[in-house]
Length: 92
Image 1 (tube, one colour):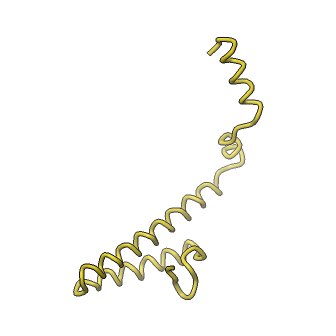
Image 2: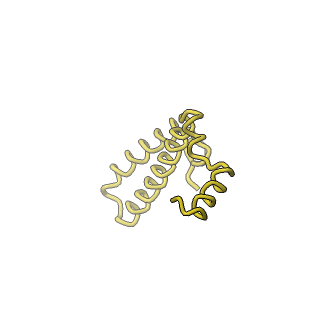
Image 3: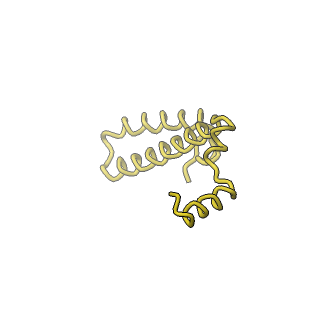
C-alpha cells in the first residue's frame, strides 16, 4: 500500500495526491543510477498515484455538475414503459 505522510493513498485529498506525485517524480528523476528494475517499480507507483489523481478529478467534476445535469443522466422508471409502448406500436 502506498502511503504519503502516514496516510494511505486512498485517504489522500487531491492536494496531497498532487504533492505525492511531485515527490515521486523527483525520486524517479533522481533514480538514473539505479537499476532498471527499481526504475520500473517507481514508474508503477507513479502510475498508481496518477490514476488515483485522475479518479479524484473525475469525482470532483461529477460533484460540480448542476442538479439538472445529474437528473438528465438518470433513468426514471416511466421512461422504460414509454420506450416499450413505442416499440410495440411501431412508432419508432
